[in-house]
Image (cartoon, rainbow, N blue to C red; front, side):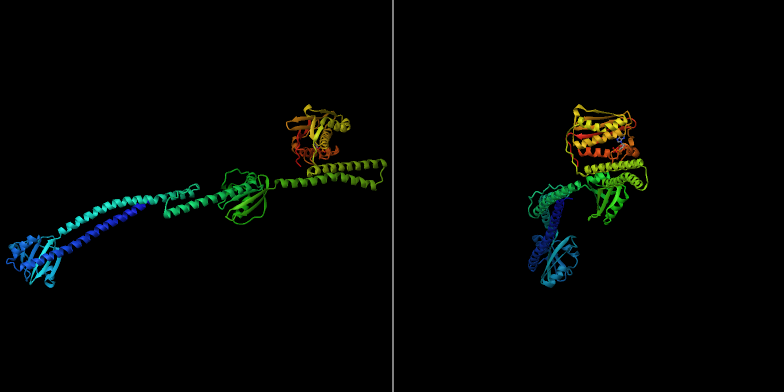
Length: 572
Ligand code: ADP
């Protein structure tokens, strides 16, 4: 039921009750007033009849004349209560009338001079109004039927009812119009409030209504303005917060009190390999006991210590903290690379120590023998040469390590210039010529006419080529060929060395550029290798913004390429 209907029904009920009351009250009152008036009139007539009765010889004839003249029933009663004349009965009729001495109006009139009564007439059967007055010892009575009075009352009531009905219709129409007028702005306010509650902050009430409804409209208007302003501020803050969280290197996962993930930044998505739309149940997070226990503890209000978990092969540092609102936030930091570097560093120290320990042991052993034993001069010379060879090996290892650490630490930056590759290759091959000749190898060059020069640091480029040529010569059996060649690429040039040597098994290729990684440790050592040559090549190429590649096949040979960009980017 709408407000307009309720207002209308309320006012209609009031009008109906009011009209009904009016009809009822007016009827009762009119009846009462009419009776009082008629009683007075009948009393006056009775007194007149009483006065004239004294001079009338025939009571019955007088009663008939008086009754006809007045238009009312006239009854004359003697001192004993016997009816001696009645306008309604003839003489014969009078015989049958009972004694009237006990009639209430007669008793009253005898006592106080006048009496009246309202009752059903035993002779006519309808209701009559009787008024009696004393006339000496006798009593004169005038009476009339009340039907006339009732007719007057009924007609008056009918008039009141008709005017009441007209009034009712008018009042109902007015109340309908009033209800519509009052309810319209309230209904509009309700619609606006509903829209605001549903998030449509652009809706405003029309500020046309007057009085309290107008005040309410104003208040809703101000409320909407404030709500919109606060919402804007909140959205702005939310935007800033989201941008900050999104840009964090740490992964952030926020879970609400109902165990639903409500926020997840880009880093967390990558670390946990999640691409679900928010929000989603926390049970859909990776099945990792450390992560789940920390989340449960934080949701229970306990801040956990930082711990390490492994998710999908990645080592993550996890911190779980409870949120004030009953949720929890998880912070994740990727430690995989840190841990890998730590392990590389540990391996490196172990490898370097091991590499240095072998020649050191040899030197120590031979030196001790030289000091203590009596040896023939020939053998002494041989021992000293072994000591020198091992010392030289240690020097090479230390030199290579120093080179590597210099490149890695950023203490060295390449100064790139255009280097003439043909000249450089001739130089490097000339240095390797003696070793190649001893092994019966052919050294050739194949310079691409479009890549006669390479943009690189000349010293670094010479070291790259020397290492590659040394390896090629070292691992190629007699009668083989070693070729230095260049290739062009859209963004720079490749400097490469191809050999027809022993090749490398595919399983070694992914790690061949690591420090101290060697396919055959004994052979490398015998050939004077340090296990650092290719690592240095890779680092030098990368220091120029380039990279290295290797292709190899057991028994057929190896190609190692180093790429140098035309406009070198210093990555250190
Ligand atoms: P090394 O000083 O031992 O040569 P490198 O870092 O230069 O160390 O090379 C690493 C390993 O790669 C070598 O021990 C060798 O087993 C392998 N290797 C390098 N170049 C070649 C090649 N041209 N042919 C075959 N094996 C090679």
